[in-house]
Image 1 (cartoon, rainbow, N blue to C red):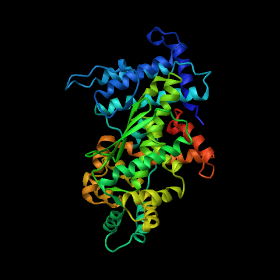
Image 2: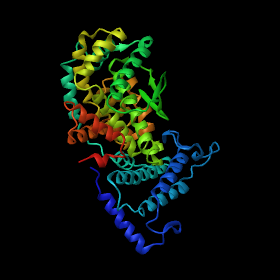
Image 3: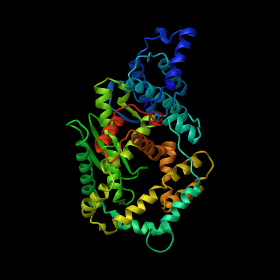
Image 4: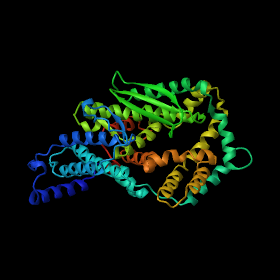
Length: 441
């Protein structure tokens, strides 16, 4: 359910402004249009994106809204951009939302929080520092839980008993994983097969446009494992990073997360249901550092279990993907038990990022923590900084986002033993402007 506390505050603020202030731009109170604010918001985000290429993850609105390129070395106009953002936020407080439907109120709440996020990102580009948790709340409307390192030490102890071989745990796991890595010459076939399967399963449950499609590319020298560049008109470019060997489990993870029913489906549903059908132009742009990203990443990770629920995933991998990759599935059950356990270490990356970004840990200390709790070499652990130095608290969107979506789905009675309800609630989640706080209890 959408929480209305923030709306009540905005309503009271609008009363105060009616009584005490002259309407902005001489516009009578009560006639401020959210559609006009939405258009100005899109143009604002596009302009901020000229100064930081990561800001705009996808845009498929009118080409004439794109601002002219800025001269090389141009100074970042923080004051001007901040003023415009503040004016839009003030106008949002004047929008009459008394007769909103729940969906319209969700739109209103989302735009308020999106404006908070872009205001924060403008400040960050200009050099302002926020703590890890402040940044996560302002950008993503979310708060990451905290864990003691002893919590992760217990998981490592359990893994010690599971991973075959002798010697240090990290080396044993590295050696064991090699038996499940796909050679580069087989990557395209295995990925295309997995994406097609995820696509067929998703199309059986969600009405997708007839023209929807994707292009798959393999790339190197990226700070991520996979990425979806949504092109608009139900088209995506999905890239897979091959800097390191690709283990078999990454195939379905990427196929579902970046494709079906993940980012590709999320974006095309927003475009179809909100932009094309309702004319809500703010959804023609996906700002990376925003509350939308929390839902996008969380639903994409949860979507893996929606499209391949329970044991069906391992069964499909053993029967189809292992043979295509030339791998022996004889140890698959143990391998996936080890993966399940090591997956519980994911929140250790949040703690490492929090300490590093807050100045509690040095780069060397952070490298050691990542190596220990990600069960990887110190050299590979350094790749963590390629991500966290660029994307900072974004890391919470993957695991905190996934768990928030899982809890929401459970509260809505959407479980694997009721596939119809599972897909119904999940599809609604993808095509509705929810934020972290609006899906939290």
